[in-house]
Image: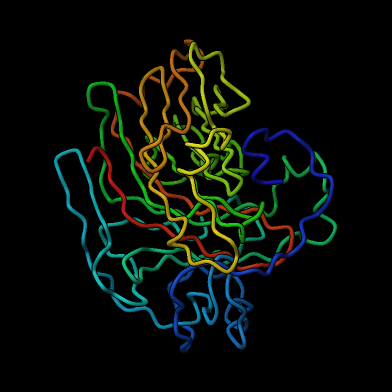
Length: 351
């Protein structure tokens, strides 16, 4: 399952996923006429707007973003020489993201059954809807073959339209996102990706993760699944050189956390029941990257730290000493047809 895959991606699936049409998130979009803007390879996306069910992670009477008319975005980003902060507190409703962001709709591996995504802003935060058909008949094996084929993984990404650098050997990324939503189950997770790539490449190293579509470039990425078993990975451009989680240390001299196994960590990374709005678990994640260390905090509580990474598992030099780009990915694994909504908020890079 996808959330468990984040802890150990080579474990085989035993059964196909059931569709979990449960709800759990923010103020609904008002239905309107279908509009363009979402990356759509199927007219079926538009046909779903008639009596559309709310996306996973959204409260009734919400409908998918491609079923409403989106207005122009409003830029609220605060730019520094090597920093970026944005709280998205513009008051806009049903709006596109502004041109200060680069949006990568349908940023998934070529064989994915994900067929439409849409980023949009509303009520002081920004969201992403992702739709997929689920497992194509005869393709999903429910076994190790899925890790090679990966037909149902995909989603969308966005990043500030700016490059950043490590400062004193350190990069800090903060983001508010509702990761602990029960409605996601094993279907969906947010992912923070730091890489030298200005855009996804045609060389895929691992389509299970958003980080796997930046082949040929160094990457550090952290997945934030609903079960709160966080995992970060270091890529050297072609392979994963380190997996960091509660179950894997990659030889770190100091390794702690990665799961809600203490009262402090359990309270810090909140969860939302299907009937609760996303504000109840839109937590602030802080990722600190250093040459030999990766630290993840949630709402000010140190949730996972791996320090003293051995040479083979350290962040690549080309990442530490080059322009880098920070992506916020909304990624899914769909075992059945579904629309999933992700809820993001304030972002800060070196802020």
